[in-house]
Amino acid sequence: MDAYHHLNNGSYVEFLQEARVNFLHSGDFAYMLGDEPVPGAEGPNPNAILVTGHQVEYLRAAEHGSPVQVTLVVDRLGAARFTLAYDLVSDGHLIARARTVLCPFDLETNQIRRLTPLEKAWFQGYAEPVEPLPTVPKMRVGDHPAFEFPLHVRWGDLDSYRHANNVKYFTYVQEARVALLRDLADRRPAGADRAGNWMVVRQDMEYAVQIDFRPEPYLVRTAVQRIGRTSLTLAAEIIDPATGTLHASSRTVLVHMTIEGPTALPDWLREAVAPWELGVPTPTG
Image (cartoon, rainbow, N blue to C red; front, side, top):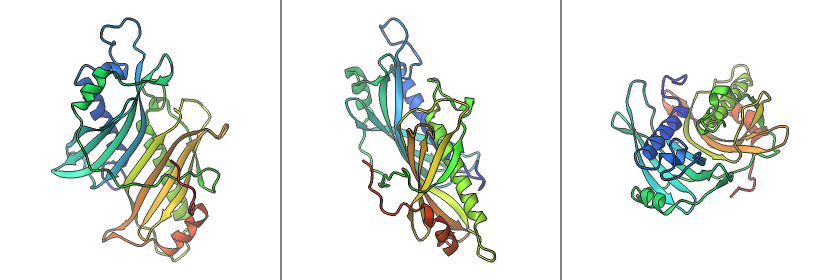
C-alpha cells in the first residue's frame, strides 16, 4: 500500500512477474527460467530469461483486499525476443495495461539466444493483436543537472540469478522520486500554496546492465523531461558513479491532484524544477 491507501505502483509490476512465471510454468517451458531441467538434456540448466523493458499504464487505483486478475497474451514474437501484454482487472475495472519485453539467455555463453522452433510455436499459440500503449519519448539524463539519490541495493533485492530483480528497479526509481518531491516541498516559499498529491499514471523502464549487490551505493539521477499544465514527466537513470555505467533508464508521468481532480502545477514548483528541466535533448533510440 502507498501513502494514499492504494496499491503502490511498484506492486503492479510484481503482479506482472507472477503472471509470466505462472505462464511459463503452465507448459513445458519452465526450463527457460532455469527452474527445471531441460527435457532430454544432461548437466546444469544454462537457461535464463532477461527482462529488457517494461511499460506500465496505470488507469485506476486498486484498493486493499480487492482481488486483481491478470490476463496475459503474447504481443510480439521475434527470433530472440518476445513481448507480453497484460490487462490487470480489479472489481470489474481495468486498472492497468502493461508490456514486458523479454529475451531468452544462455548463462554458459553469457549471451542472448534464439528461440527454438518448439518454444516459438508454443508462444505463437498465445499470440493476439493488442492495442499499443501511447509512446513516452526516451530521453537521456546524461550529465545534465539532475537530482541525485544514492541507491543502496539490499540483499533481499536479489533474484535467483543473484542480481537485483527487475521489479526492484521500480522501487529504486520511486525512492529517488519521493526524495525529489520532498526536496521540492522544502523549497515552497512562505505563504505559497502547498503542492497537491501526485498520482503515477505511466512508468517505462529499460534495463541496460544488471545491478549486483555491493556495499558501495549506485546513483539515481532524476531530471524533468516535460512540464505540463497538470503533470510532470521525470526521466531517471541508475548509474554506477565510479564508472559512469548506465544500468537502467526510466520515464515516469505524474499527475498533480487535489480532491477535485487534476490541478495546475503551482508557479513556485515550476520555478523549483526549472534547473532540472532537460529542455529538448536528442531522443534515444
